[in-house]
Amino acid sequence: MTGHQNVSARILTYAVVLKLALNFILIPKYQATGAAMATAIMTVFWNALLYIEVKKHLSLEPTIWSSIKPLLKRKRH
Picture 1: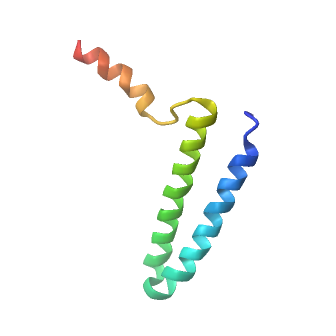
Picture 2: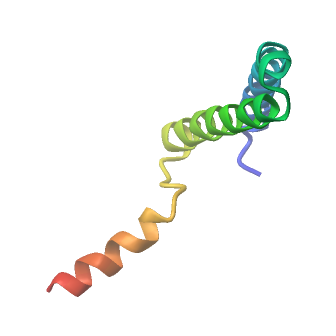
């Protein structure tokens, strides 16, 4: 809805390639734990890249902290 679907698709493609590579590396050595590690690493990578793109292109803070900061400031005064 913001016209940035191509950037999002590119990031998802990078994440899929990373996960496939990590699966080939980690699963033979660590079995199910390797698959879980690959998924965790890919998820962090994917979310970090999307976070950066949202901040850069939309100037938004896409985390819970944007909602909590005003509440914390009010409690201090």
